[in-house]
Length: 275
Image 1 (tube, rainbow, N blue to C red):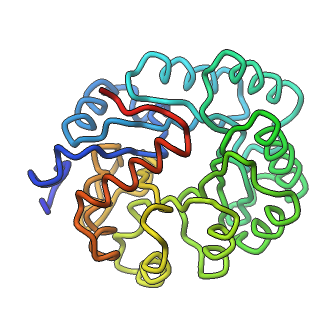
Image 2: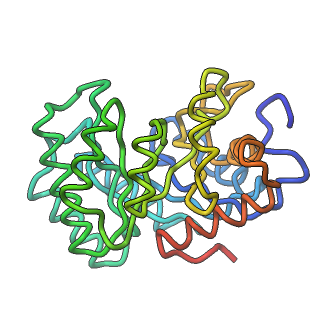
């Protein structure tokens, strides 16, 4: 593996990767978004799932427009738990309209975040529950956010049910209990650059027991750049570095992991590969 901002070794840059969770609509990409997209293609990342999860309609519109204009990019939208207080009839109407026009491949990211506590627990529960119900109604998969909330997330999912279309626990960092609950409910687990961090040995041990077909690769760009050299801004072209570490953990070759995780991304979000 190269030691700087490279986008994978020659043996991995031609493989069909998918980034199942990125935020390329965010301001850190405004100055050079076309170059970021070009580097992703050069790294073999042909599918991008863009997550537009603001409570502000103009920011959701921004993500929607970017996805519509970018080959291989598909939109998931919803209201993040940090902004759960902003989920209401207007946001729900926006999501319904975007779905009716064929612009959504999933709802999210939705869930609980009791680490930052930027929204009250009751607001988070309301937004989580309402969006789960909407996903069931619209037959869309969900992208779940859970931080310092494993037990609460598992309890709500068990009580209310997972949409038939399934979903993914984004940026999975939980323990065995949440892993087992997620797999039992038919969910996928999203693996980010966190898996490369020196302190993440417990996470690597938990992931080692997950069937590879139930794992998705994601950057969460611009966050969570992979080690050993963490760039100041993550981007989809870093997916091969995450894949190499996960392949090592699972004792797979990178080509096999790329094939499995990309196929799972396409199947979950019901999108076709970029030709």
